[in-house]
Every structure is written in C-alpha cells, then in structure tokens.
Image 1: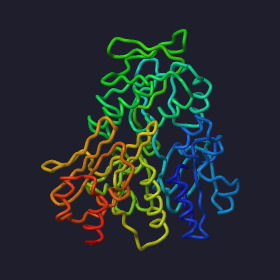
Image 2: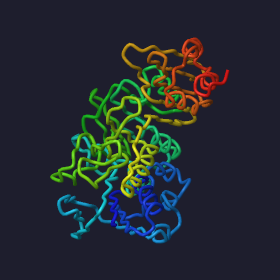
Image 3: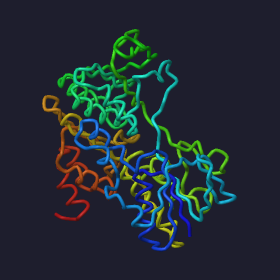
Image 4: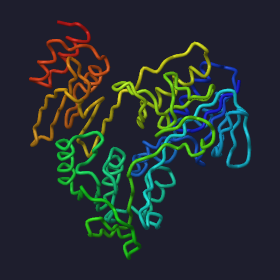
Length: 415
C-alpha cells in the first residue's frame, strides 16, 4: 500500500505519523513545496523576534525523524493529480503512483491586484523566505506598514513591535480582527494597541504601492500616503488547490469532503486548511484555517485511509485565541449569534474586559471575550457539549462570569 500525502504542514506531518502508527509496513511519501524541512508557519513570529532560529520552526526537531519512521520526504511541488491513473505529477517532471492520496496543501496569502504589490519592500509574512526578507528590512526605528488587522495580521503585529519598528496598521474593516470580534471588542483592541504606540487606521484600504526614497509608498484609498521601509500584506488566505484543476475532485472554497474526510473520488482524502469540512456549530461544510482543526482532520483522514471501518468527523468547533501585546482575546462557535437568539454581555472598558455569550434557546452556541483568561476551556466545553443549560441559561444571562458553575451544573450534573 502506497500512501501519498501532499502538503508538509501540521496536517500532512500528523497524517504521515498516524499512517505509520496504523500501518507499520505501508509505503508513505510526504511531499512539500518548499526547500526547507516541514515547518510551522505559526512559529515565524518567534523567528522574527529572534526567540528561535530557523530550525526552531521545524515541526519535528530531530534530524532523522522522518527516515526513522520510513516516511520518504520529497521537496517537489505537485502540479497534477490523475485519479484515473492513480498518479501524481511533480514539478520536477517525475510521476508517482498511489493507492491512497491525502491532499493537505494548506493555504496561500491572498494577493489582490493592487498596483505595485510586487515591488521590492512589499512582502507577505508566510514563508521562511518571507521571514528572511522582513528581518533584513525591519530594523529598529524603521517605518513599517502592516496591511490587514485580522488574526494573522495581529500575530505579525506583535512580532513587529518586538523588533522595535515604527508601526502603522491599515485595516479595510471598521475594527480589528473583524472575523472574531464585534465592534465593541475590536474597538477596545484598537485602543489597546494605540496606547502601546501603534498607529491604527481602520475603514481604509490600499489603492497602490509606489517606490520612494524610504523604500515604498503605501497609497491609501482615502487619498493619503504612508512612506515605509517595509510594507507587509496580511489580507487573508486562499486554499492551495490550483493543481487539482481537471482532476474531477469537487472544489468550492476548498476541497469538499464527506464526514470521513474523503472527497467525491474514492481513495482521495483532504485535511487541514485546504479541506472544506464539517463545522460543529452549523453542520455544513465550511473552511476552518486553524491548526487544531488541521491536526484533527489529519488523524481522522489517516485512520480512514488505512481501515475499512470508518471514523466519522463530528465537526470542528470554530475557535480563535489571540494574544495581542498582552491582551488575550478569544472567540468560539457562533460568536456573532444566531437569528432570534439571545445574548448576555459584560463590559469594563477601563480594564479592557469584555465577555459576550450567545444563546440559541437553552443552548450556549457561541462566545467572544477580551481580557478574560480564566475558564476559557470551560467556555469551549459548554459550547461543544451542546447540552440544555436549564436554569443556568437565566443565571448566565444575569452574570456571564458564572461559567464554571454552569459547566458543573449542566454538563457534569453537579448541584
């Protein structure tokens, strides 16, 4: 049995290790598209502030990790999948046959058609090559413009502050992290960052980039310009699936999969940021570009690649936890609420504390928080357990902080 896994991020590596555990004799080939060993993109901010070196970003630290497990690692991007022949074509011209195939190619930063976006001095912060370029330019005191204040943008923000640059953040939406925070929480986060010396511009996009004496001029759609030694774009991501064109695999925003993480073609599976799989809260297939989902997908897909008795994916809970210059924010499930639902809110602007719980009848279905670090796991558990709250619904409506009591009373049945 030959298992091929395309994509060497957390999903791909976890899948290969799971395959080896479940099938000690099968042939396993892991294929990456970059020259470095498999590494974690989430570790790049730590590289930027020099808390780790490049080897510290590697997903597995020991030099012989893959060979010891008889996992063959190839650094050669896949250009085509041929399901009829059960083969793949590599950029270097090679061809490999497979018995089971896993697509775990992740995502790539969006590159909007903005004039000048390919100029020197305009970079993503996604690969180790990007990190090297940023380190060269982001010296202390350098004016830097970060375009995008979403989840990834805020992680990059913290690393740039650690490099002691003069930072300006430009965000198209009316608040920071608009896909995990409402206007209240996003506004508080903006004030927090501004009080740390960061200039935040919301409700504003980039019209063009031009070369200037400092490096690059970032021309905004409000008519103003920002001169910078470095501009970093963090405007979202898209699934890496161009190589699947003509394969017959069903595609949408990502690779569509069934509850077993299998595509519409037998023997071909998908996992991680490229897989459009089941969402716990809605029951529909959605994209969830977060590492816990990637790892969960990988283990389930690998199990189903080996065994005929399938393991079903119950759906991943959408969750994001972010540390922005010491202020912790989090969102879980349907944090924006549901039509006809109720919510309870706790706000202390002076202390940057905010907690909002979303209810659908007797069920807690979502939550968002800022400045709260206690009982975050309990909050997730209350949503994931999906048990009727009973009397605890009204108690949480009156006091959202009674999360632990509600968990013990409704989930564990403790009086």
